[in-house]
Length: 185
Image 1 (tube, one colour):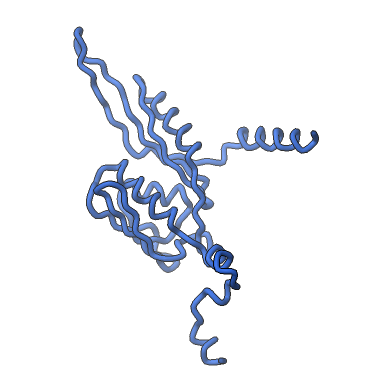
Image 2 (cartoon, rainbow, N blue to C red; image 1 turned 90 degrees about the vertical axis):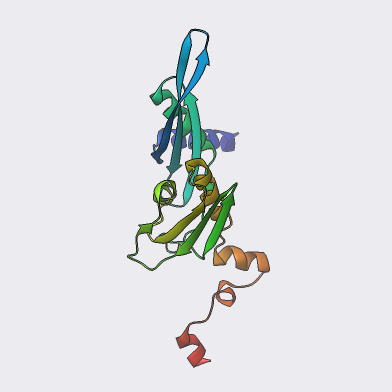
């Protein structure tokens, strides 16, 4: 019984703390032609993240812009994915992501490089908490497809700890040996 109350309290704390940052990526005005004229609505695309390895995106549609943004933000918070980061600043390895006609290439970068990525991809990396990455979008320039392709690639990201655990090995056996270590051996 006490465990259930603790879980409930933890959930309440999590809802109260605004730990997520959000970034509006695109807003689109759409119209529907009806007998009396045109009805306008808005579609919003939002990326949400905690800037410590979790990110998600959502889209919302409504008659007013703020309502569309609110809906998109709520959907983004429900679709968060965790991405392992090296030193909390870059990716562990190079990745490719695809969605539809969109293809993105993401590469690790040394400290001080910054986020070299365009538009929607930059928003994803900023909300994720990546500080150094080089990325290129190939194909579709549609922001929805670019974000989906970026998240597809980020889901493929595997940390050395995860790979070692999967293979039942030690992390030191997985990582490549440096020149100093190979000279000692």
